[in-house]
Amino acid sequence: MVFRPRDLASRMAERRRPHDGYLRETFTLPRDAARARARDFLNRYPKEAYMSAVESWRELPGGDIEFTMRRLASAD
Image (cartoon, helix red, strand yellow):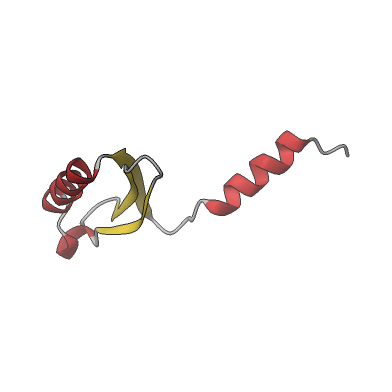
């Protein structure tokens, strides 16, 4: 069986995606817009019902903030 670099990249990408039942959204916004977006996300999907959280964030060289929000798929 011949493996191509694309096959390896696909397998590595699958490993990075956690299969834990959470939905994740990643945003890249200026600092003030990032705060507002995170606040809106947490208001729309409250932590008590969806276990919502800012999973990770970082400041990019241009000053923008890249962050990932996570929440459960449903609150049943």
